[in-house]
Image 1 (cartoon, helix red, strand yellow):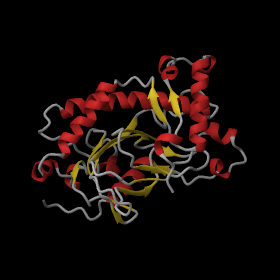
Image 2 (cartoon, helix red, strand yellow):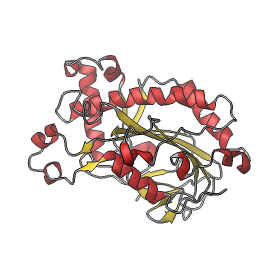
Image 3 (tube, helix red, strand yellow):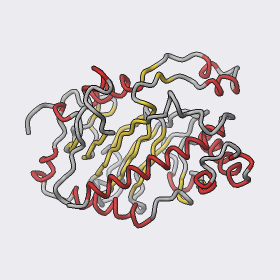
Image 4 (cartoon, one colour):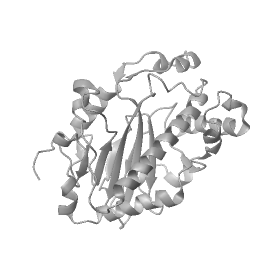
Length: 306
């Protein structure tokens, strides 16, 4: 199943997208055109790519995010449970090893789950399931402030990457904005994988991400993410096996559509690929309903006690 994560993925310099992000004539810039070409190829051939150059988030901040995450997961179990995830807090907070399931099987990881915070009642009955404030630990003390800054930067970066992808599909830079992604929701999973060095111990089972765009900030010196190459702009099957004796962390930021967006192929995609049935026929899905269903299915065994 696995593609070697480090040697087979394209590295894309997206700095031109950030510099020209507010211009309707972005594609007239040769740097933008090259970045868009590489994004198109990566989305078709692999579904994953490295954004190591020109992304605008400092290496020191990304490193500190990982360091702080390691510090949290090293805390005593009782301390981590102070921010335990429950339905009563909107499925936000810490989950111990074995709480998360993928395709009906337990995953060997622990995590903190966070969602974009929103006003009570904003998304009606559907949104009630996720209403609440993100839970942050008392220690490390500066963790919340650091992650708030990181989330803002990831949100801005994701918007600009999507503008490049929008151009790659043959549209304007803003095809994904407005009713689709004008008020984007986001999800963040801060994940810790114990070192086991056993192929049959699955940190996270094979799955495809069900949102729009995922940014991954992970330990550089531990190979664990395995991907399966696929077709045109489809979500790529991947899993995590920590083939190391050392603990591994991964901060996954999921940039999503509007919570109440009806998700279906964009008009520009229908026009560009008229012969592709996937671009013409679609079961329309409301993103928020889909997310809530996934969350409740994943944590259907979650109980309201320590």
